[in-house]
Length: 220
Image (tube, rainbow, N blue to C red; front, top):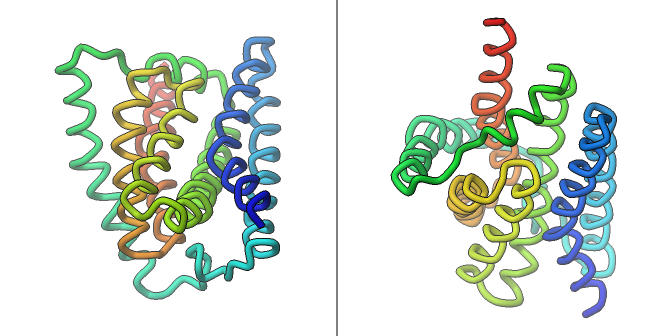
């Protein structure tokens, strides 16, 4: 049981980082679109393995990791989280990064600009959903049993931010990633609605990543 617990925890917290690092390696060889599609497939396999370990050897129920059926509250919760992040939390974190003189998201946008728009949209839909399942659904719940809710929130947020370093760089990942990850983890801890987290994550990434790149392409 201990082995299954640790294996599941490692999959949930380190799987996305390994996928991101592998994607960066392939991207340097000029195969960014192919690398991105492969990353989505690999991340989906990691997520499925982590959930199956939870449901099997760890004897978790779907509802215990937030995968019960959505309710009427789900879209309202998602809207509240996404709106608060897009119009308040995100801009405040970005302003704080500017005050510190930290660099922005240029590294990540330069790479994502090379993707086809359809590939980028698919990546946002898939990766945002799977990250919520791994970090919040599996990782947070397992850590909460082991170290308690407060420490679990901190550890999940740190792992979430580190996974974004290969694409976005250190400064954005340790500001938006760390603190933003903390907000999403706290929201999940309060609501237990993983579907709401996933929908909000998709909305935030669509507004923050897809729309700026789409608008830049149209302006050319």
